Structures are given as structure tokens and as C-alpha cells.
Amino acid sequence: MEGTRRRSTKSIHDHKLVDHDESSAVIGPKASDALPLPLYITNALFFTVFFSVVYFLLTRWREKIRNSTPLHLLTLSEIASIFAFITSFIYMLGFFGIDFVQSLILRPSPDVWAAHDDEEDEEDLLKEDACIVPCGQALDCTAPPPQKLTVDPIVVVPSPPLKPKAVDEVPFPTTLTEEDEEIINSVVAGKTPSYSLESKLGDCKRAAAIRREALQRITSKSLSGLPLEGFDYESILGQCCEMPVGYVQIPVGIAGPLLLDGKEYSVPMATTEGCLVASTNRGCKAIHVCGGATSVLLRDAMTRAPVVRFGTAKRAAQLKLYLEDPANFEAVSTAFNKSSRFGRLQNIKCALAGKNLYMRFSCSTGDAMGMNMVSKGVQNVLDFVQNDFPDMDVLGISGNYCSDKKPAAVNWIEGRGKSVVCEAIIKGDVVRKVLKTNVNTLVELNMLKNLTGSAMAGALGGFNAHASNIVSAIYIATGQDPAQNVESSHCITMMEPLNGGEDLHVSVTMPSIEVGTVGGGTQLASQSACLNLLGVKGACKETPGANARLLASIVAGSVLAGELSLMSAIAAGQLVQSHMQYNRANKDVAKVSS
Image (cartoon, rainbow, N blue to C red; front, side, top):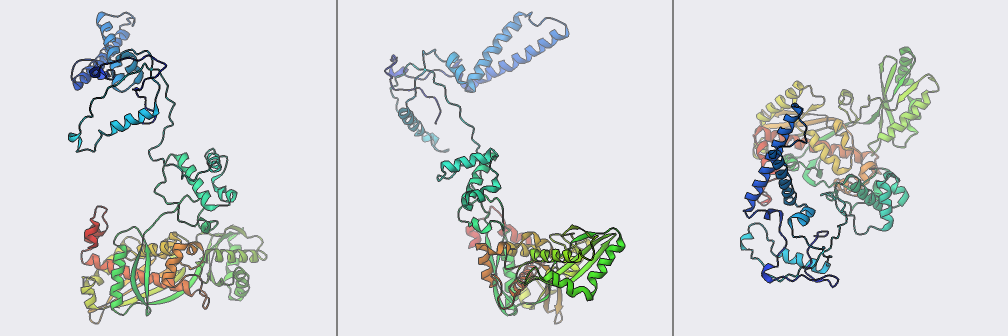
């Protein structure tokens, strides 16, 4: 080991040699050689003496303090105890490997320490390591033949202090240059802001690597499991993520084919939850063999709701009446539509809270999800009405009446993004053979679980089994905003018997699916590939907005498949069994795959 002192066996011409016989060529005694007894007895004896003496002396000193007796007046027993304390303490220091104690007290007193010889130290290490074997083979290990050792006079050479290294610390890549090292030290010292590396270096990947290494040095924590290579950091600059240090890998599975509106779709799902893709895939199979599912788009409108304040509630009500008056809609929409050639104002819904006014603007956004687009249009309208309402105080471009990334009744009732209904008729024999249950059981379970159970829980838009599972997985795979899973997962699942209870009608109604096929994370390579797989990559040139609307329908169709499969698994009592088989870390992969 580097930095470990070792007795040199090579003679040094500057010192006298001390000759030894072969049989006496041994290293000096250790702390455990203090008594001619077995090691465990010697250790037990000295430890017992040490703690017994400590207890005795503390007791005696406490009695002297209580009796006002001077501490320096010692009895014979106290003198003996102090001597025993010192002796046992020195032994314990030697036992725990304190080198200077072992060398000065327990070992013979040599004149000097020997200087190190690197080549010979390396040979000694190799010889010692040859006798170290894995656990279980130690009984077969034979000691090497005795070798003649010549011990030189030794000289004390202090070891340089070693910088403590964290267990998880990993070295910087071998491509580190002196310039990189200077920048890293500057970031660690706080002289260079981490967020400015991209602009200073002009190389996004190099900036990420330097930021990553600086972070490891600052925190003394390793990022060795977080990939750095194989990602286009230029593509996220100023758009997706700031101050990157790597990227997270999430496996993508394929469910399907989903037969929806007469076309087949292989649905990519990014998830780390076992059974999710398999369950959705089973639902797709049941839908496919029954002729597929049908979807209907009810509404397509993104919303933004600023909050403004007036001096009186009457004045706030006047603006409300102005914005909701059909006679003023053309002028307001003209101001709104200047922000984009795709953004078109549809309606304005206002709510009053005292002298505060909340205005919920709804507009189409083409193939973009549209949050930025609608925000720009809203700002144009605020600037426009400020001329007629100069006393209006704009408190915020968003007043949570939108409502974005939060469960809200306004989204459940009015909708936000794409409102979609998807339905399918599942034959009775498919319910029995593929889903392993029956129609009446599914209908009853859906009523008691998804409807009554959710009502008992006070659910808001959560009248389903696990719509958010499928929505989140597709959103991550296709570059959507995962946080909008909150309102996008609003869903009510309905199941009704058909043909005298022989067949099953199943549907999902999702009023606020917020998706886009351009902008945000959709332009990243992996997410773009998943959109391409679905045939909805980028903007639709023939019919603007068609790709985003189709993606929303695919999300709803996939939710339909997931709901159908999970409800069947619960009805058949298969839920726990399937998760124990496919969602356990200690599973036998070979057996499962077979």
C-alpha cells in the first residue's frame, strides 16, 4: 500500500549492517507480545486492568473531593493503580496500532529507521498478496518458504499527510486538462458561477463535465452511476434544463398494438414500475380482438387566468361585463391573436372575488401544448384593456384559476387542453378468456371502486383505477411536461353490460389532456423517436393541431386499455400475484422470461 512504512531488506551503503541468523530474522515484537500468553488472554487481561483501575481512581478522587482531602496525597494502593493505568494504557495504544508507541516502547530500540526502496517494497507486497486468498480457501493456504532477511539500521522518515478521500469519490475523466482543472477550482471556490459555464466555455458538454466534477468535489459524493456521455447537451440549452450534470435513464416499453379509430399504434411507455406495460398490453389485446376502440375529441383549448385588482368591486365587475360581452369579443380576440399565427382566442370566463377579478382565457394552440402561446396572448389583452381601465392593477399573469399542475374542479368541469372520450365494446368470451373474469363482476367492481369508492374519498377527477400511471409513462416517453399529469389524469371510467349482460361497454372520459408535439422536450432525440413511432412527430402541415389531437386520443385509448386490464386483474384476484411475479427485485429473470 502506498504510504505504508516497511522495513527495508536491502542494505544501504551509508549505514552499518546488522547480521542475523536465518532462524532469528524476524520483525520486532508487537504490542500483543507483552506477556507470554495467548493473544486473547493478554488482551482481556490488559483491558480488564485498564477499566478496573480507571473506575478505582475515579471513585477514590470523588471521595477525596467530598472529604476535602488533597488529591496529591496518595496511598500505596493509589500509586500502584496509577502505575497499572499507565502500563495498560501504553499496551492499548500499541494494540490499536500507534506506531510511535510500538517503536519506542515495545520494540527493541534501533538506532535509525531505514529509507524506503520502492522496487523492493513492491516485491514485498506481491509476496504478501500471494498468500491472501478468498474466504473459504484459507485452509489451503501454505506459508511461503522462510527467507533470509537482512535488517538495516533504520532512519525515521515522516510520511506525508494524506488527504482523506470519500468512499464514493470518483476521479475526473482522463481528458482533464490544466485549463479544466483551473475552472473546476474556480467553481469550487465560488469565483465562477456554475450556471455561467456554458456561456463562458461555448461547449455545453464540456460545461456539464466540469460542473459535474466540481459538484463531486464540493459534496464529496460520487455521480458515477449518472451517465454523462451519449447526450446532446446543446439541444437542451435555454429550453429544457439548466446546469446539467448528466441524464437519467428510464426504460421504455411498448404496449400494443392499440387499435384506435381503425389504425394501429405501438404505444411507448417510459416507466420503472413493473407490470404496467404488461397490463396495458393485455388491455390493448382485448380491445384489438374486439374490433378496436373509438375516440371523440370534444374540446381543444389551453387556458391562462391572470388576476387583477381594482379599487372597488363595482369597478372589477365592470371589466368582467366588458370581457364577457359578445360585442367586445372581436376587439379582444384581435389583440390576443397577435401573439401567434396558431393561437386563437375561443372564450373568456371571469370570476369575481371582492375587488379582485380572475379572467380565464381559452384558446387553440396548434400542435404545441401552448402555455407560452396563451400567456403571450393574455399579456396583449391586458395591455389592450389597460387603456379603458387605467386603474387596473395586474397582480399576476397567472392567478391559479387556469388551473395548471393542480387538481381543480374548473378543469374537471370546463376542461383544459384536449377533452377526449374513448370507448370500446369487449365481447363476453374475451372478458373470460383474455381478462380472466366476467362482465357482471367488472361492472359491479367499477361501480363500487371507481365511482362509489372515489366519491367516499372525496376524489376530484379521480374516478378511475390508475389513469395517471399510463398518462405519466406516455408523457415521459414523448417529451411532455410530467407535472401536467396532475390534471391530465382527470378521468372517469364507466363500465356497463350490453346484450343482456353478455358483452361489456367500457369508456374513459378525460377532460384535460395537455399534450403537444412541438416545443419543450418533444424535440429531444429520444422523445422525438417515440413521437415518430406514433406518427405524430412535429407539427402537422396540412391541418395544424392534428398531431397533438391525435396524441391526446392515443393517450386516452391507452388509458382505456390500462383501466380494462387492471380492473380485470383486481376482479380476478390477480393483482398481488402478478406484482409478486414481475415487480420484485429478487426475481429469477431467466424463469420469468421463459
